[in-house]
Amino acid sequence: MLFKQLMPVLVQTVVSEMLLRPLGAACVALLALVALGVRARSLPLATPAAVLFVLLMTQA
Image (cartoon, rainbow, N blue to C red; front, side, top):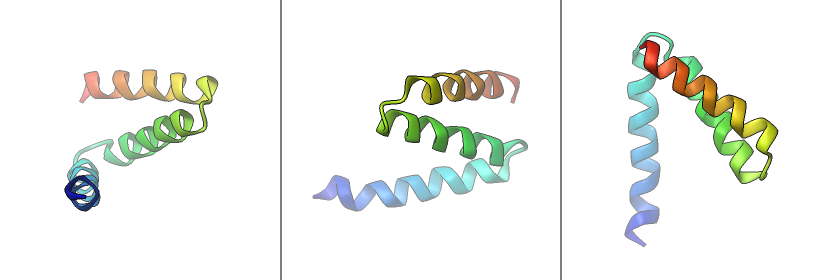
């Protein structure tokens, strides 16, 4: 129960902090694609998004 209440607050905080950084919108979009690919069990969608996210985070 506590986890369900804290998760939206945590997601909102992380997304708002990421949007303040340079390339933050791209990070949020790639994370959304990773989550969508994992939820849909689509390896061709999740893998490239995860790789691009990791590459983007190493550059930031």
